[in-house]
Image (tube, rainbow, N blue to C red; front, side, top):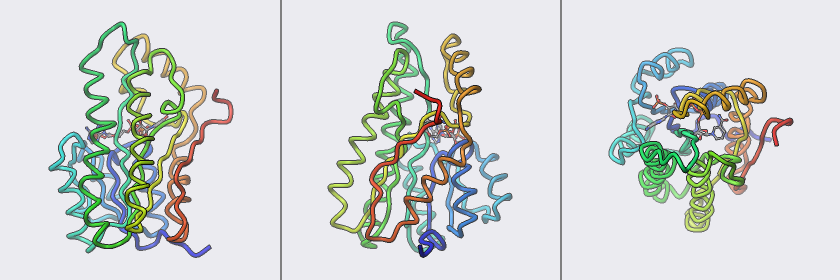
Length: 245
Ligand code: NDP
């Protein structure tokens, strides 16, 4: 198959660690032109150095700020004249039982996992419409398909991302914009560190220690979706460690 990644302008949110950073490394190897955002700028700079990105291709970006996300997209367009792919990847997983009423965690999860994705869509859709091409990739989770005790709010944000992605697909296909939603199971990253409830945190850390697969599994799934011919849209990919429920 002809490589359909080389030269593409790809913006990734939450690129400072885990799945986002692994995807940046993988797509860089395939010749993508990357623009990366996250809050930890030092991490982004060090990644940029590793993969030969110019320093102005990484930006401190908090996805809870629509202006900062717009600025990230504008940077890609200013640097490269277009945006081919947006990967709305930034997220947190602050699991806890609902009876604990951890309102701060709930609000942060909604602001980052759901509103953050909306901010990305809001910023990228108009330039992609004008180009009459583009690809918006949203990151959900197996938790968006199946809830468990402790994961209700996270699962709700990820289920919302599934619905949002299908609604987006139906609305933007007429503009030749592709949409993909990825639903990974346990993948090695810093995500378990976003659990603030100590009991839940240690159970999740153990689970990830035993089950999580390398982050390149996610990067390869993203690359598979991007690498299709322009008239093929991989709408959804769900994958998990072979031994995970
Ligand atoms: P990490 O914690 O390693 O990475 C999360 C990334 O999101 C970091 O780069 C972090 O950067 C960024 N982030 C967090 N909050 C914000 C914010 N407010 N604004 C901008 N960036 C932010 O975890 P993963 O790599 O695992 O997570 C990536 C995505 O994958 C998430 O959406 C997660 O829900 C999803 N996912 C992960 C799974 C897994 O098992 N790892 C399974 C299913 C889904 P910084 O702190 O520098 O801002």
